[in-house]
Amino acid sequence: MRSLRLLGASNIARRVGSGGHRWTSWYAQTIWRTLDASPTLENHETVKTLARHIAAHELDGQIAYNRSSAHRMHLLDHRLHKIGLALFLATILVGLGTFFGLVFAYREVKHVAPLLGMLSAALPTLGAGIFGIRGAGDFAGTAGRSAETARRLAHAAELLRREDIEYSTVVRIAEEAASIMLADLGEWRSTYTHRKLAIPS
Image (cartoon, rainbow, N blue to C red; front, top):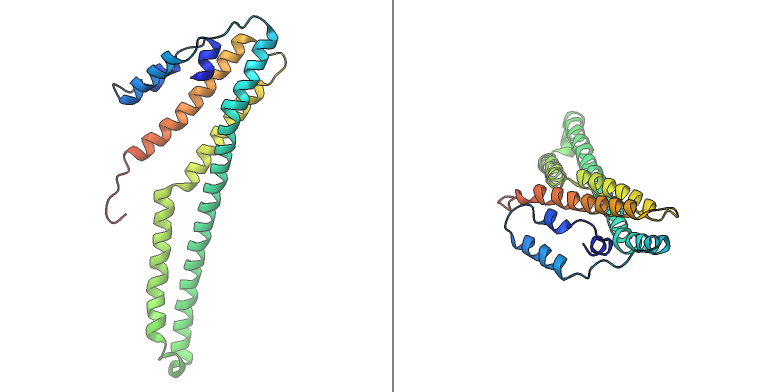
């Protein structure tokens, strides 16, 4: 909103508050009204400076955050997948070891058979829990959304840094960047609004 106000662009606060009479609607509109009016953008150099200011102070931080978030979520999903796969393979090995031990070395194995049986039940239970965490957390989906948001914002920042950029183009790109961030926020809100904290989760 700060950057759009400087550009004399559309009231993005109306889009923030489009979901009804929530306190966030009032808050966004109040902030918009208290921001300083747009300066006189009388020459190309002023427009170019403001465009680069928007790219540096509004978009670069969001790009870095989303790239970092995408990397962390991808890494977390990958590690949980590897743990689940290891538990699955361990279950197979314990099962096969128990079977062949009881068939070919019954006397040696019978003393540890209860422990092996417990492992045969515990390992897949842990694996199912890991799979449930991956599904509930949707880490892969979050990584994908963050990576796409970072990609689109990086493209907008690149355009804002062009030497031959014009005022109308700056306004269009700034509004598009705001829409990208609002869409990302909307996806987060729609995803987690309906996820109630309930036992046993």
